[in-house]
Length: 474
Image (cartoon, rainbow, N blue to C red; front, side, top):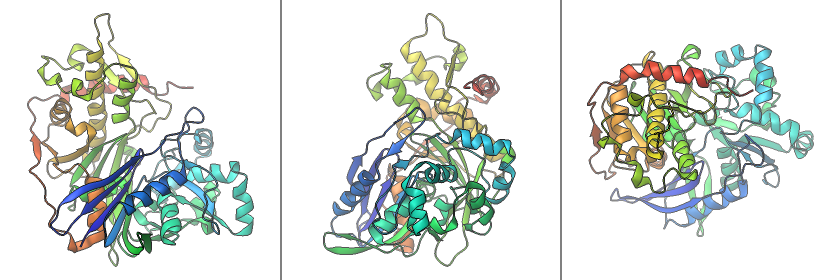
């Protein structure tokens, strides 16, 4: 039975097909445009995303079931009758609601949100974006009066438009700041706090179940799973036991550890309790999530500045006698603020230790190390609550960089496992869709990095640099 997974991410939409023999291959990948209409704003064209998803599905020959993963906190609003979007997708990176968040913080609203949703008050999550849409998109209040307004994260839009199901899965709903983590339902008090009527929100359903059908090449194909991309990656990594952890190094770096049936409220550690997944008829499985907002995006930014031209150029730092931090050069990748455990959107990206003999490759080496040190901050916070039980599994573009992986092993002082399968997010969506029917995936052996030296000693110094970057922006 051929299974198709659609990975709808921040920069592209990808289709992974798995055939009866267990062979998995990408059959289509389409990048989409990023829009930056104002400083701090990040948008996608919802029609472009819908078209790309349909093209990816149509590219697969005779799939029997579909699983879809989504961006998580990116959201929009649309007309219930026409199913046409009334605004662009407001992407998870967008911080246009910063002023609104500051007001809620000054009104001491964060305590209720932490208690019910388990999430800090931040522009990252969907709730404040929904509020912005209601107050700034002229068509939104008009549709609300007519009972025709629908709002949701991108998954709800995709499913409503393509499968005629106005639903969102529980893992995605747990990223909005509007879902009560203990009940798995929209919380009336949280919705009232953000001014979002529960009537405009989709029904919350399990991650694996029935999500309607999508038409492709004259056939109706059932959708059997819908899930947040990072939770899909957690499942794709095989993190099915409490304490299993993975890190995906994409646009940002996202570390998740499976916590079983326990949702850890961890405000002191700046971590996010979240639903990992819920299978139909079963209880939810939870996870702890910690994010570094700028990971590969920091490297791509440096490339755009002309610091290097080919990714092959930045793989050879293991030949250097010293790390950048040992040469007193440090980079803090707070290019869009700091996520866990600091949650400071006013932090600024920072280099410390520049001198006249600092070259372009020195800067790149420090960027790679800076991403590692920020990731270590997140993992150390997680480990304070849940013991990570075995080697940490990683994926994403940076996992192809040998220096980065070895430095990560040295700073965490743990074994790092780089999975041979690159498409772990899509694979997780496929596995959730297929259930027990998918157990023959062909994988090459993974690559392991053992600690060669103990670089944990440099973390205190790095945290001094992080402290200097915080609250920098007015």
